[in-house]
Length: 59
Image 1: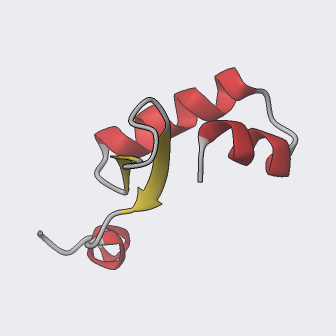
Image 2: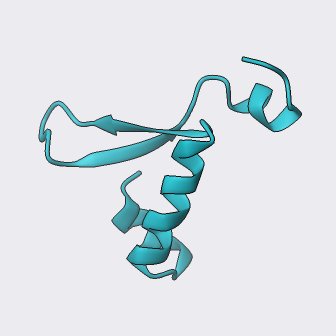
């Protein structure tokens, strides 16, 4: 889901969403993926080890 889509669905500003995504990326919860159809567009997905991070388990 793109940051713009997240902002629209949550009724938050795009700036707020981008900041939250940055924090989530820095903590390893979310990762950024570039679309093959349009490399300029970024979407954000939960990382593979999302559950481990939430439980406090080492990766």
